Length: 465
Image (tube, rainbow, N blue to C red):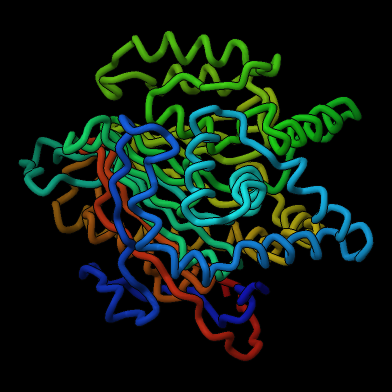
């Protein structure tokens, strides 16, 4: 389960030009593969929705060995054998459900079909979003027919790119794409890319909106009450008394009110009411429900674990630094990226390095200490490539756009951002990479990646060297 480690790769950034040719990941990296795609019919009973998928994935589920992964996590967090053993024995009694009734029923159906214990799937769903390293962002991309004269801008819209990175290699077996429909043979209303058995949303798109979730390594611990309230919320999520961040993201993606148990928590009362109102409020970008204003309004005061939430509409990229009862949002109509650090960390990289060194043992065990430590370097790498491709596009199109920041790039350029030659973005820790189109509401490109053999130790060079 140990991380292959970003430190194992010797990388440097020079001023050489990146190619603008389309990237063939199969030729570039024999460890990449296509992601299997399945349809989930929401008109079926929740317990039955995934039954047709299990036979095809059962060998992969067995190879993933979720029980061993759970034991490894507990051993990493609680090295004391007696305490660790006590936690493992009590898990079946404590981890009995997730907050949302519909998601809980889906997990019960998956547990029955796979013969996995329910507590294991619950742990998988409430703990996973606390341990994921990622790169997410949106960029203005010229449409194929986006012609322009010397006086007009090319037609363009936002495209959402995303990689998911961490060191839990066995979970690579479970990467899937799920296409949600509301009736047999009906149109796809939303698509997600994630892990089978994980019913929340880590990466998803529907017409008018795409979204991804990144791990955030810090939260507001400035007062004793804030520390207590944050840990209290985490415990309520684990015990199924409040929804996880990924469960909230699923509600936004599928335009559904939260289906809570009879004894719903105080912190979620208004969220459900807001969801019901939003579902009846169609907008231009989100014609069937939650629009981005409603989402941000709800997130601004809702209880939550810390996370980065990235949303793209056809015309805007939004990055939300979410904390308990608060959210800070950045926006761009052209290019914006999010990794595993706050925007403020870019002014104090030493503080981020210290944060990486002091990550809890469980995050170090999954490679998160390295992913956090190299987060600003990933940003610098992708920013340099973006500036190069914008410069090339402006030269090629004779400076049609008055401001370099408004220059759209090509879809091939987006692949260049992901496949930088020094492997800062798609790297040894990457489980999958996705490019989504919120205007069309579909996934444009997706690849999963196998674990790479661990190379010898080598020094990581400064990207500015």
